[in-house]
Length: 447
Figure (cartoon, rainbow, N blue to C red):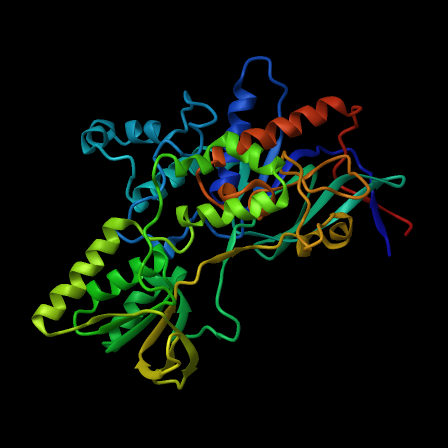
């Protein structure tokens, strides 16, 4: 097997980012602001994104859904309060700043925040290649030492290669479906909700089953109940009722930047305990206003004698069979074991997301990535994967670090601060390393 070695003299990027969701967008902004600072040594960066344009949970951009984090936890403010990439700068550019202030609300509409993301992405579009799928990453050797990474990608059917000193993996989240569930035209994850509405409307559905107890499940149930006034919506979940999200001031300290460092240094038993204590700040939790609204609907329908919104609690689906014309769902009551069959037109699983594993893209580099006793990647405080032997450059993670850095790892709350820490790590490590010539396109050496 041939291995890549340093060869022709062409530029090397300081950073190549895989994926361009909010996290790597925030990093692109941090790089742009760093390079604009007087006297700063330029950091070269480029990002590769599979989607044809910027998009963030487009299937759940429900018109009246709001963000669950303050607008101040945008792409830049927590790192740089004077940033021209802040949400307030966006509002000013759209001539809505005064209107937003008068609104007296910390939580913008989700569609508005997505528009903010798109606005910010347009300002750094010279740093990203859309419609580009990363296929693999291979090491580049100088003797026996790995000095660079070659990123192999495909765009418009053509192969492209970029060379980098550092990788930042922002591969995002993947929809999570329970084991044994096969998605199809009638069974799907809530991430597809808005993309499916038109097709569902054409069928004039009679019944939906929504599985899950979190914010997305409650939003899906409310939307389907609104959009299909002749259909029954059955919400199935194992809890007794929807649990309110804990967004109280003291509990929210788990999202503070300093909490990340404290979590990182804590013993494993304490980390596990903190995740259990504060899971209600994010997981399987629903805004209290939405809980109250769903309860009002259920009560109103009982008064009217027409019950379209049904909450089937302390239950779980045990069999889900797509017959082609409908979905047969067997629901088991956890308390008694009694089973009920529901014949539905569609089943929507609002069962969360899982972080994408970045290591399959790393190929032979994956074997250098250290793991803990539970098989999880070991990660330094600066979000760099621990590698054996150490690499000249770093492989940084944006997401998939809950076990090391806490609950903010997949959330917007700490994104601006995290990318600042990653960028500072890259800058500091480059300054500490002996200067290397600028190489890019690899030659081929002996195995």
